[in-house]
Length: 430
Image 1 (cartoon, rainbow, N blue to C red):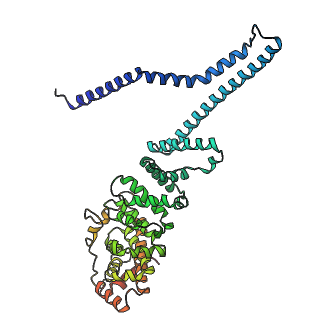
Image 2: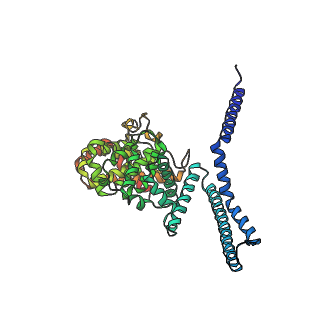
Image 3: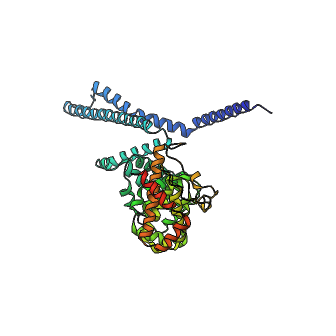
């Protein structure tokens, strides 16, 4: 029978409700459920029963028996009075404990709502509270030692994927709130290794991968690649995705890893397999101001600590850097001394995105649809600093001879275009 869309929806809703009602009725009438309800009612009412019976017996202390003497009766009366008093105290204390737990749970839930209304957050805090109670039952000193941070870090080794995801979510929140998780995570090789391995998982939860990338980015300054074989490939896979946030985090991780000389050597050793230098060089063509600076900063550290590897790419690297400098915007317009070649925006970008889009179309801005003028100026200044610093390192570390450098400048910035641009940059910052 054909019905309208709204009618069909109401019919399905009514059917679903009816099924649930029948299911509830069937369950309610089952013997197991009835017994469970009786036990639950008895369990909850037992403190009241203890208090009621003990109070009643203490009020009516008639313990006389036909065959009991006066002395025995006096002793029995005292013993029973003590027994009922203890039972009464037990019931009162149990009720006080239930009330305390209820008040604590209510307070925690209210605070949770003020922080986040996400269901996972409520579940995590509830599990954390339960864990604290169990630990305190064994040792009260544990309450001061176990924090939300340490509890979340502990769950990084959980066999449950749901608990692992919850731990990653909580760690991401805590790190954003200013807490330092590096010592706890890096203190356990297994925890750090699992986070690094998560970066390379291309199938499954994208959210988990992004959370792991944010956490690793915060830890990257303390990571030594030699201790985690294969982790560099996992980081590189972040840059091979078409998801902008993952690309950003991959660059951030690599940038912080490259600050350590030993990591630079390990990165260059893997160059034959990953072509990191080549990919970073091609990313200098991006139109996105902020994220052109990051590859330049990474390349600078690689030029300093393993120049023999980077020098193999110098014929491609230097023209890209010079073109990047000429393409930067300045308040002071350089003198028109000749045509300035612009970088090919499409060259090489297809290797960054699986869809072939330029990286600047993928990477997000920090202030919604349009960044403020001040942020644009700061980003441009950072880019200029990174490119000029990289150029200085290329010359200082003698990755290219002075003659070859002069030839590259003549070919890529003819008629003094580079000098004019440098003057404009100096005027803007003086």
